Length: 460
Image (cartoon, rainbow, N blue to C red; front, side, top):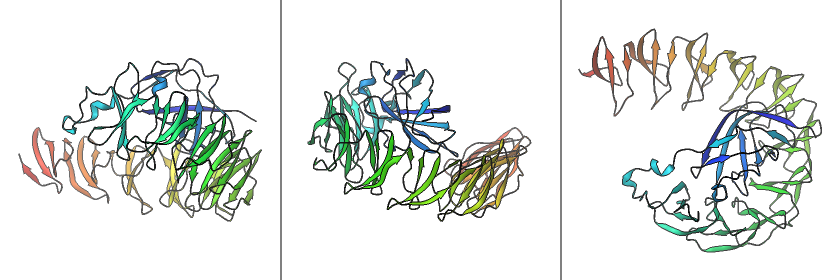
């Protein structure tokens, strides 16, 4: 099976604990795509390649050399990465920077009025289901949980802990994982070598090196025969055996046989799968509904799936018919009725019929601010609307939208537009500061004035 190389162009790390993780070697790093559970267990991490063509996928990444003093205490770790992947296969090489840095201590972000005694804990996680993980000292590095007013509800006695999901948290005692309720009561004894969070009433757990599923009562609902499993998603769970992927349902039935080199979750009733060099789309009964000769493909989104043929990208519908002929160097999944497309170094935007709302001549298109995005052509800026239209490029710069308003600039002067593109404050100011309580400070001809959202000067 061919190996791929993932070039990381941006690595954004959100850690529950403020640590520095030293990666000594990369020899044991590997990824298994399509597993969506965002957890860290036994130094196994999930990554997400956000974006275009072949990078909108999650995968496992393991590094056995995470030997920092705090690494065993990490209960949750989320890594988001913008990746460039050439194709979909079972196994990839992943080359991260030598050091991965955490954010600043999250405790400092809580206001003094929150009721948190910042000296009581050395670290605290985000909240989920009314609970946050805390560590009270670095000596024993034990973890517990607090409620939203920072009262201890679960004593810090655990080696590792995951955030609550569906009322239960997976916690590690010694070398085994079990589950507790929101008050700290043990619901499922720590008998497992690994444990995923509960999703749709089931959790994947490992016993004697193999995975299976348990329910809320701790009943083992499937045989422990899988090398790896993912959480359930719309009634289906991905399973992995001997390098192959398949799907099972909640009745333990193998819906999609475990024969595929790569497998995506169902979208628009179809799952993208790869078997050797062949690409197919499988329906929820396990039938290969669409067989198409292509170089690569993306899963369906809004009724269309991107396909790559002879080195160029286009789109098919759920019948397997080509509805937008392949002609682009790169495409993105449809969202809000439109898809970004690239032709060489520039980007554009098409609708579901393939009409180019913006031809691929833009240097830049932002994400949407509610219903509007910003784009530029030849260093002039305009607006792209979710209603599938674009305004002319009439500004030297458009700043990000905040509360439905954005500053614009022509030459050295500033004005303000609203989310419909209407110029509500003329471009006459030397600078306009952000609005606060409906009023913005502005400079004009060396003077400071205060203006409202209609551009009326209300105070000199």
